[in-house]
Image (tube, rainbow, N blue to C red; front, top):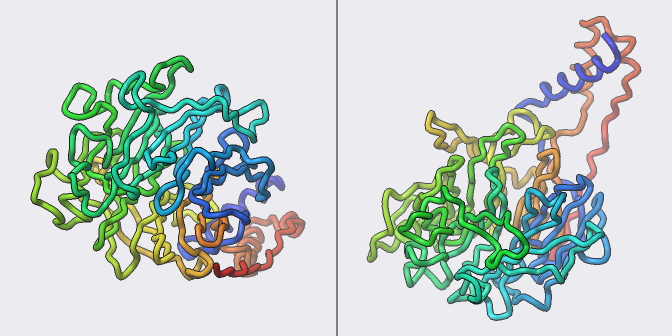
Length: 441
């Protein structure tokens, strides 16, 4: 057996040894941010991330160090505070060629803007003059989505495995969706939108409607992908490139009783997730009927004993947390600063059932270290990160460090395979278990 084969065997044995009982922990990856709300991996450079600050700055981070100048500064173009501000960023699938990316923010009047930009010649600095705001009501119309109240703006944008841009919009705000907007077929609010932004720079509105959108032929605004959202705060697609299903998994913030996780198999648009008629899996305001039925139930919910505002997460597809953690959905609560994961079991139709709820708050350092988790992120290897809004810190989640017991398992296996002389030359050392200092703000 060659040395390379021995190293590979040792790695496989170590991974097996960690198994389902791998100890998770959170380590500081980058710090010095003000009200960070998102972490996005640069699709063209694995050493670079972008951090969104609610007040309007997008900051480039290379190898854990904040770069200067800012990637993009929109502070003069937005309103910020409460649930307003710079809320979402997504790089186009062809970003490496076109340099395009999309941001979602609330303008000075509080209305939602989805704007297209390009990178400059320096990929860590955007070209602010390239800004084009998507026009939702045709050429010449205001390039915004009007928000009647200051809250429930949604704000997440992400490209799906189909290459289309998904835009999550809240119900427009106030309490209990007083105008029933999430069920109004003529409204964009309270919906998930899906548009094709792969259009020329000269295109008058900046997108076209995909032909297979569920309402492209009528019955609702053609941009609408799904109905019945209150305030979808962070969603993700189960990474197909890493063995995922491509499903859309959404954390939808509740009114006053229940927070929910919703699961949508890949390509299953046209669904109604129930708000405001339902909150979680429970009747809510039923004085007006929903736009259509059936109403899709969440795969998981929790009440006010656990938290007060869900932060949707990701289906984990990395390797460092161990094979037993792959396929689990990780999510958090912004108010209580708690983190959990659930197992997702699929039936023959691709629909999910959640089970085996586990809490990871203590493993990740406790609520004071996590301090208002506003988002999750993944790197180029599918590994997991948390965004602490309260501390202004990005935390990287890692598996158990190498331990003497792990090394003993490897050594015994190599002895059995008669590769001990080579194994003795493998200098695998235990890393110190460095604690992350908690900072209260």
